[in-house]
Image (cartoon, rainbow, N blue to C red; front, side):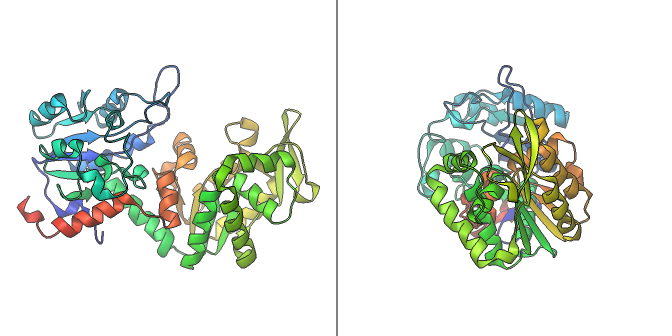
Length: 417
């Protein structure tokens, strides 16, 4: 991959590898049980490639103060089950216990360090540049007992912290198999997709969706953009449809300070590129505890809009069937409620039945693909959520910048490793 070191560029046999991953996963509140191991499974190809190395896994789960902020023992246990290999959990990040555990490793060993966000330098300090993350104790101590840094933490690639971006100049930094696939697939979605190119953008984070839409339009690649979910409701509102005060208020509250920016960006899309936009023609609302269909002409409604309607799905289907590439991010509905999962499930079915290149943009959409066991039926199921949206929006990606800078420093000297 141009401008970034990959596992194919160096022989890591016998080397001590710091392996930063993002296995941040939904947990069952009462037991702490992992509810989705998709991100953990995504590590298998890189770990298979590192079987002859000494691998030190760095990871996080949630953040301090949150109910799902835990140690990494369950993640370690699940990864060990998936790999059918022993993995030692070390309840330390960069203290004496961690350093001693790393120094005592043998070829082929894997150790899983504790939640890096338990370290104040990792989560408790705001860094203004990647360089600021390098001058930290956690980087100094861990780099002293390692030969190389490999990252598959794509889901955190839009963030900046010592274990994500701090090893740029102290160790050669390499993109793991997962990171390489994420970057390659999303670059294709941005710059060289098979045509016609259809983007389906939904969910409640309307500002993220419209940023992605504007960036795709600016690249000159996307043919149509279907807006669904809360984002679709916002677009209907901006297009002159009274969606009802309750639904308007929900959008205002969800977006908060970002409401005006999202409104302005959405207006630009509809006024400057109306031919690109596909909007719902009907919706499903919750009325008296049940699902009820309304055409756009029947709006406004004081009932909450929880899904797209059947006619919208019928109109969307030929766009999906004729597409050469489909990017889908964000559900079309309040799919946690069984009666309103229909629209999202139907779009998923369309994406798994088409012969087009299909890229699922992470977050809730990716989790749905995993939970329904259809990952093998899509071309790329991103492990990112916010990072995928940042990448597709053209925003800075500190982790990718770190990989490029490390390549510039170490790219010509890998034969000495």
